[in-house]
Length: 107
Image 1: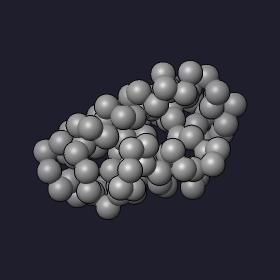
Image 2: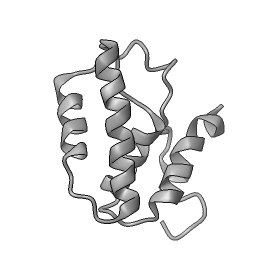
Image 3: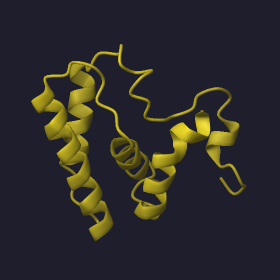
């Protein structure tokens, strides 16, 4: 959006953030697993994107090792989804900063 606040300011109630406490009761579905796998399989377009994929993969590996069945959701995953959803347009470092601060902003 060409204004301060972007789409989030106009979303009319939805607010995307990684919130492990609030999302702890949500199950990890096969559809969500496929989305993570697909995102991790994308070809990086730059070094920052490559690092973001590696960071999400590390979180995902830890998640799988834990045996958790709840929703996989971390700021790094939120950042990767945001970058991919924006068709690889944007500064990954800025997107990561945004994703790391959405929960404190919500709170």
